[in-house]
Amino acid sequence: MSSKALLVGIARYSTGSGLTALSTPENDACALEALLKDPASGFVASPKLSVTSNDLRRAVEAFFIRASDQDVLLFYFSGHGKLGQNGGLYLCPSDTEADLIDATAVSLSWFKQVIDRCIAKQIIVILDCCYSGEAHLAMKGDIPSTIQSNIGGGRGKYLITSSTNYQVSLERPGDKNSLFTKWLIKGVESGEADLNDDGVITIEELFQYTLENVTREYPSQTPQFWKWGTSPGDAIIRGQSTPSLATSLGEDPFYIAARDMFALKTAIVPFLGAGIFGRGPLSAYQMTAAMCAQAGLKSTVGSASEIAQHLKNIYGRDQFLSFYGRLLREQAKSVSSCASLELVERTIKSGESNFVVSLTNDCQLEDILRNRGKSFSILSHVLASDEKAEVGKLLVVKIDRQIEYKMCLSDEWLPDAKDDVVIYKILGSPFLSNLTERRDLDTVVVTEEDFGCLFGFFENEHRKSPSAVTRWLQKRPSIFLGFALDVWEYRLLTVLLEQSMGQALTRRGRRYAVREPTTPIETLCWQRLGMDLIRMEPQEFTSTLLAQDAALS
Image 1 (tube, rainbow, N blue to C red):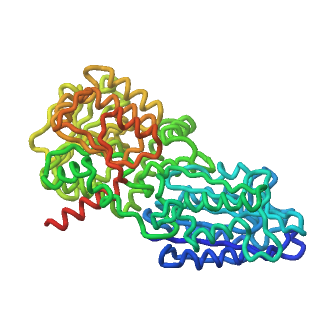
Image 2 (cartoon, helix red, strand yellow):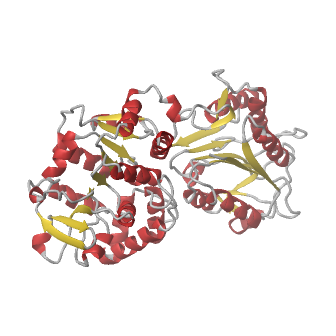
Image 3 (cartoon, rainbow, N blue to C red):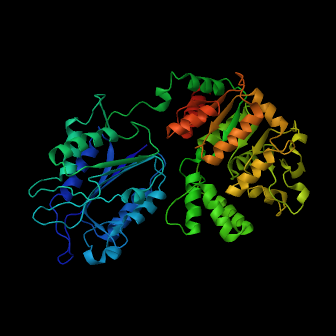
């Protein structure tokens, strides 16, 4: 994991621009650079001083788009901020013209679009913005409340602003730093922002320290703080990193049980969700963002099923599925590795797993198995077919030296002893119609209508989950990787698990979910599903187990 900071200070503006020069922004950026480069913070920091609009856009896009999914990114801006014609906030580079804000400044809506494409593990945005105020006070301007929607939600994201709407942020003549940034710096340099005296300064502690001191010195200014999809203590600004999750969970009985389950080669049932890809290609995040772009939406709004439904309504089912298949293929090309898939492949190779439940539409695991020469079957439900009698039946695609397929009622299917593994692909895939050479066969569950159709099948005794699947889940422990539990995922897992296992859990059939819940509601949902929570992200959990396996071999 690498920590990187892009620090922007805009103090100088062109004569006639309508914007006054400022005294502190360049000092602010340089002081933060020295602070964050200290080994105790460990950031690679790059200052950008009084740059033009084009240079700022290029620096911002390169900073966010080139980040890896393990990076921690901090973006800081000190300078003028102006409201555009539409009320949105604009960051003002050195060549901004006050009467041409839309054309010469950088809008927060564009900034959010860049962030939406970033796959970094954590993103911290700190804005100490100003707009042209009264020259004798060199007042720094307000951050409007709309900034929260401009930056948007997501996972692992923090936003700190120097003031509220309708407030001003003070920059006194002769001061080296703005009031807000002065206390940011002092809190870290002095260590006073370590509010619980544990040797670590988190972003939450730094904000609380800054808030208390800014409001004490200048009550008319109130810094603001927002966060999305984070856990307390996630983002560390100064001090030793907290122990890795694997170490901190070393005494957790659920982690130990799951770790030993893999170490002892216990027969398990992996459940795979799109979260196994993190925020990279094929993740729910990237797929939703791409569908939003196709729909002409400026930012990622709504769930994947909502956006897919919108696209299907616009283009029709056939054209939408054609687009969706292309999107899956394009993103699959950019997937370099996936620790969760590698772990599942190893469990199959060692004989620990011969049954996998997949709630993804891609065929990454299937391609891996084909390349390894494995014999396997894919099970999926037929949503639509030119042959009406096939709708609702179970599609069974057998992949060995040749590809064969058949259809049957769910309660008629029995596993083939010759298969190395069976993959129950509940949400189907556009690629199954290619494998069967049946273009009329539609198994893809991605829109809201598709989920409604699938739930209708599950109410039918002959079309719900196969009985053989039920028996596997009753006899074996299962581990859930990559599930964020959106509404449809939660409902689907509820139905599947109730049909398969009911509420009575045996030791052999325990369920483990590898997930760091983002809200108390999500924690409650996992508990209602009967899960033992292992509070790690799937990438770290699977990477830890792979390293353990490599050390023992």
